[in-house]
Length: 215
Image 1 (tube, one colour):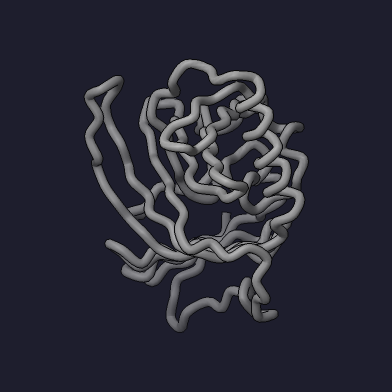
Image 2 (tube, one colour):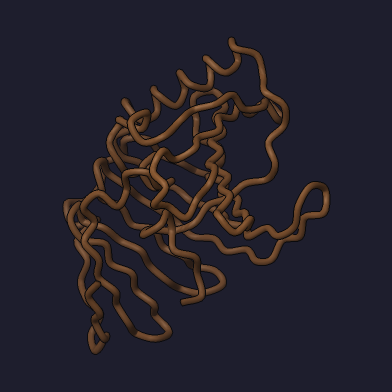
């Protein structure tokens, strides 16, 4: 597939190197914003831009950019659609994750189960027990955005570090660094919190003629 799998079994975000720790008060404010987000935002929809970044320190190079739309309803229901440069879809109905590659006309099905546990997807799509799965550390304030650094407690994840940026209670961005030193930056725009979503928003229908692979 031409896209990175989002959150171990779901999709990818990313990170650049974190600056020195901020003050306890600023960190507390960022923690409060995260706790407020996961407890009060039960559903949302919006747009995203994803950038793959390679390199270290000040020598960073954007290796690829993609964009699309998303919608989610906690816990475990979401639609994550890439529209540029390719049309590809990740969708979950709370029990099963469907990954559809339009060019190949191929669907991959996976049991969702606890796959969200220590993945970045848990922040957006899971329950609000993120402290069970992540260790939270101070992050920097950059351009008015307050950052947290989360480290998965589980070793069974492809991500080493997850950055989450909030501004005024709104989720602005996520940064991830994987075990191979690769980074990805996800920025969110036009996010609507707790919108009224149609009942069939998260019901996946296998496209006509598509090959289905179950894992």
